Image (cartoon, rainbow, N blue to C red; front, side, top):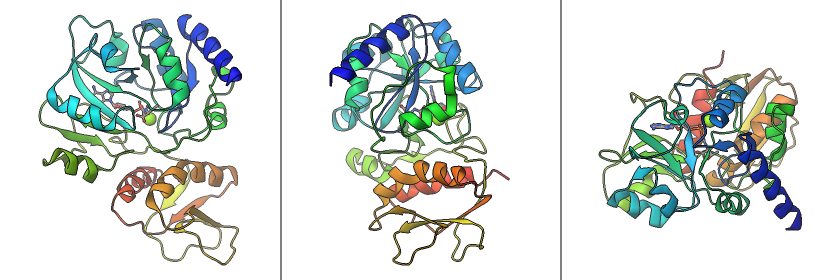
Length: 310
Ligand code: TXA
Ligand code: MG
């Protein structure tokens, strides 16, 4: 705990000096900087090699602070009460008076916002006078990081501090929901679509083509940069084989996402497993068919985008 406190102090110091740092969240680790500063947010795009056309998610401590930057509506409040802090991001209308850097929004009139649940990052946010822009802490189109070590592997000495919050509990990015007009899911993520739909008692479309490119709406994404084949029953001899349920027989090429067929646990282990396979220098990955329900939907979404890599 003492260690955390001194690290948070260090983090505040870096952020106040317009530096980027790595932060843990329950979904994936983020590359964070002062969302009100163009100098700081510029650095995010450079370090991530990300197109400036792709807007950033901004992380807040609470509702009070959000009100400085966004118009809020009833539907948002209903979702906020149930799911925040947690693995969900909302697209809201930006207030004219907002201080959010134009870098963050790509000059758009909307803002993606999120209230992360991880206690270390909440403690950090509480100490700052500004919200944090924080995309996933990976080079654009690659796999998102779920530990401090993953972030270090991505960026090396390009960032001076990564707060260590252990392995991310959810392990896939937040669900993004557009609340500017009628609610639409823009990215599948940490809260399954059917749950939100059930709670809102409304039809909830999933839009894969929007004017604003949302994450994973491009081509190759979430990719280990290894060829990946889906819905495979029997892998080739030299392939890494990803399965949901642990099997009794031992095979060095087999990688299990869950001990007991649990899709939530499988989602949590997905990026970690892809990184491990990459490290072991496999040239090709085969993936067993994964049921497209609950967390299976988000796993299939990420794997499909990873499979665009040829
Ligand atoms: O779980 C998460 O959401 C993680 C953690 C670190 O919070 N962050 C994350 O950020 O996944 P990122 O940048 O990798 O994905 C956020 C995506 C962007 O790619 C962008 O396309 C989309 O959110 N986005 C941002 N602002 C938007 C807006 N105004 N309208 C539509 N999509 C937006
Ligand atoms: Mg990302």
